Image (cartoon, rainbow, N blue to C red; front, side, top):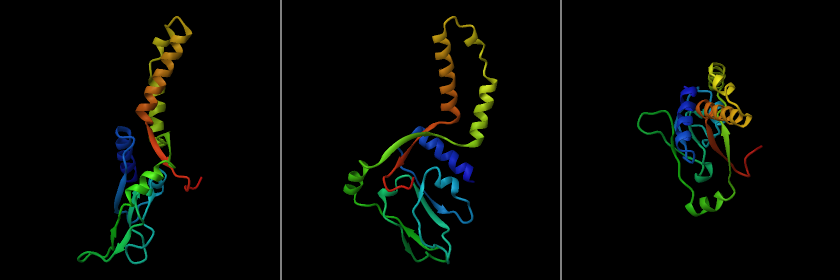
Length: 165
């Protein structure tokens, strides 16, 4: 499930690098380490079912939201309800100047393996037939960049001054 979620996030951020992500749901016993490393921040800090935090909200724009409010369950559910509110838009705009945006490549091991296979299977003979070194270097870099963009796409991450190193 985590792999599917990360694949969807990769596709969305590849098409829309500045998209705000808000991933919500009952994550029960799902290991969320890779989701948090995406990097998405988990906003829910209190228990949502008895003493456990099962219902979670992940986002890449945590500075846009207040800490979620926990409300009583709806109907016969045994999970508490979460209410997520945005902060005042003026403070969001003023905080944006402090955000550091960076490009990083996907770090998925299966995609790295696919990249290695593509490099191994690429036909390099056209490069060896070229007469000048500059053309060879240009060809080489074009192939590498195309394969990297295909298998390990760039995505934008945001880093706040308050984030831990």
